[in-house]
Length: 65
Image (cartoon, rainbow, N blue to C red):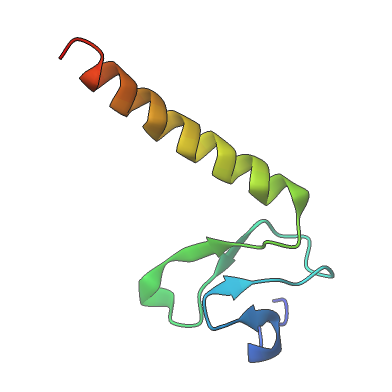
């Protein structure tokens, strides 16, 4: 298991560790799920895909109104 100590959490919200090769990282409290490792360039691609998907859904719902 990788080191996910507090020194890798920015403002308690964002995980940033260049030495950790994982993109999805468990949050300190496992009941809260996972988050992205923002030290990876791929994590920003995933964010872009997620926002694009929801933007497309909003566009499809509101285009004929």
